[in-house]
Length: 138
Image 1: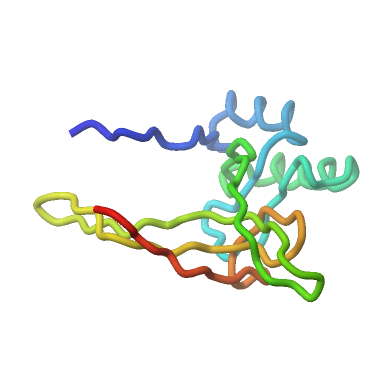
Image 2: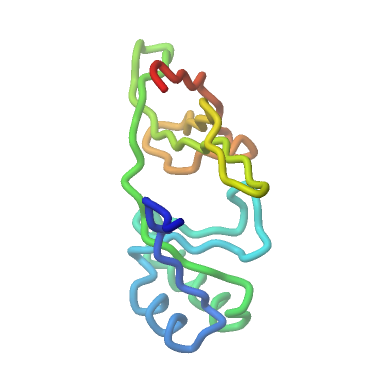
């Protein structure tokens, strides 16, 4: 079966053409360590200073195989309760998918939320949290 939703475009910095593109568009992209997790060792280009982009470019050039890059996504928001009242925060949904001799989507999923105002990083190790995920209809 063909996937209904496409994967996010990903540039592997180990490939010369991809590295060139990433270096030319560093301020527009999210750059992550290939073996990283938890939102560590990454650059969110649109939120980074010119100096941070320049320093990260040096890391890319020194060890390009350690990084991939992706466009910055426009994450949805949901309300959270803060000391000042309800406030929007960015979220992402990780659906539950079971794979064996067939692929089965399971109702529900993990909704991760950025607890810092304006942040796109939803990882719990970076101060993110979770929200209940309700499936109202099958």
